[in-house]
Length: 169
Image (cartoon, rainbow, N blue to C red; front, side):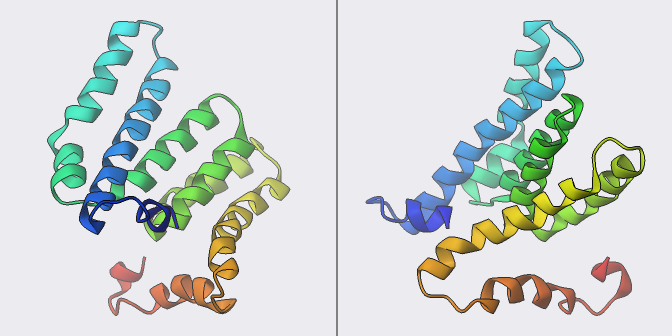
């Protein structure tokens, strides 16, 4: 949906994807800065973490050269961690929901969510935030006339994508 909105800019589709990914590099770096700020108040260390995140070849090449958007769900995961560290579980779960709208691989962090629930860091009802955020991301598709099940099927179809047990995990 975000890429569709960006596509109205007078740019090539490839430029739109790359620019969006590069903007998300800054969101990810800011998330890392905020996480590091929970460990140290030294601004110099925080800024070094921020700069290293932006200048790391993996992130730089993925976004600007290859137009990969993995940084989007990675940034959401970092903000999830930050809000957990700040004891704001509802906001943290919003970020997990946002990450899930981008890439299903964020499910690998869900055992942490379960563990935190068992440690009574948040209430069971808070877990509803994640599917609500995912469902909210479908609303633009529904407004555009998409069938109700189509966005949901994108998730259910992923379950049968791989044949090997370790790939399905």
